[in-house]
Length: 418
Image 1: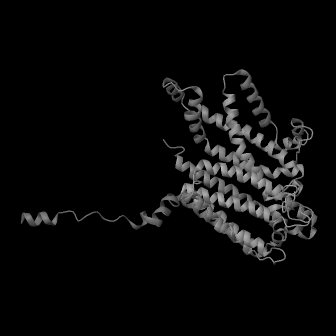
Image 2: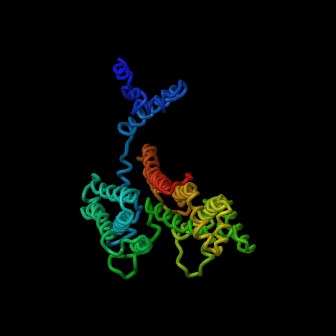
């Protein structure tokens, strides 16, 4: 009798959790309807999203007239670069496409070095998006078969870059950086041209425009403003009074003057810093001003990261016998940059958007190209809304891409974690 009673009272095992507390229903209940006010906000926000999608998508696919975008076509990308006045007697459209192939090749090499993950996604996204432009519904007179083939060539280019990085001595991060610098110089040579070289007739900068201008100014500004900003931040923290005063003066002057004013001043002040016969153009001047303006803000971001470090780390480095420059380069600076990655990327995003201000000095970036076309063709005035919505989407794609890359880098480096 006792044995039977013992068998009847043995535990039968853990019961499964309630169905409404696990899986998708559990997530919805915990995050959207955890309380009455949370549920009310969810219902109101959901209704607003549904209404926005209903009217927004209805306008996009039914009411909007997107013919102005197809009419502009390649001018939104490269401006008047391929017009007869810019490139008389020859076809120059292959040059920007060759630059795009170089970019895709370098992205493929980066993928080969970094392996699977973010680098692969970026490389494949750029290659596939570039190749898809080959299927735009244009006639062969407007978009020839050679243009389509060059766009499709981005797919094998990314594969070729991956193979070069994996199976040749070029597959090293340091060598890829050197190749990227060489590719940028080669891109400028291709776009600008060389006198006396067949097929590379010089194209004046006044014909450059579209998204190409925004990207070039952003690349130059991002690449140069970071090291200049680091140098300014270190100079501002220096114990040398003259060096510190110069860095403080530079930072405060450029941070205290609007960028649009500096662009105006670049037409007068920048030529004074170079010899009288030195060839200067609006693109070169804008690059200098945007880089220096961004470097001043970058210096303050880096200085904030340096001040956030505990002084005990520098004291420990000095106790181990490390000189000051090694302490800064090997210990303080890497941690400071890691801590201010969000601020740095935010500065880069602002720099990319600020490139649209170059219309002040008569440069036709992508925004000014669209605006000038609408003002010069009154039959498209009714399509101004569609034009600026399209331009907003273009800028959003690039800025969101930068934010996405920043988020992935932050998670890999453990920013904000201890």
